[in-house]
Image (cartoon, rainbow, N blue to C red; front, top):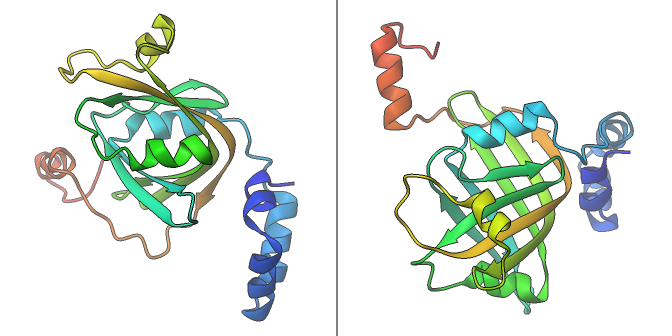
Amino acid sequence: MHEFAEHMFTPAVMRIQEQYGSRDHNKRFASIAGPNTKLTDRETSFVQQRDTFYMATVNEDGWPYVQHRGGPPGFLRVLDSSRLGYADFRGNTQLISVGNVSSNNKVSLILMDYPNRRRLKIIGHMQVKSVKEAADQDIDAVALTDYRALVERVVTIDVVAFDWNCPQHITPRYTLVEWHALEADGTGEES
């Protein structure tokens, strides 16, 4: 069974899938895909190349909150096949996601590769420790060399499941580095 579908295809979702005619497709998908609970080399490579991701949490009143996280490529670390981590630097003063996971530690991430029109969705349980609470090896695992910001918190995410999404409706976008690489290639296409 595909664990992502197991957690995301709730009774309400399945009723809507039925209503709009996609239930049979999603039932087949859930039975043949997965389980997608352990990150493989494919997911690890994808995560390590990202310089940004989007993270959703839910507050005590049930309101969803989506936060953008960014940094140098690889700032989101694959700690092992079922754990991710990143350093939360000084300057994050609203602390909405940190507050939300203190009462409901479920989190959802979307990692995008716009040029290649790929998307990885990850669900998991997030823990946040201040640098005073975190072990030295946990801080070292998420610290970024040559990045001057001060680490205030260590964030880890225990991966429950993940799913790759189809490229339909993903508009290719390029960072300046990616765009300059395309220009240097001279073909106008990514090499």
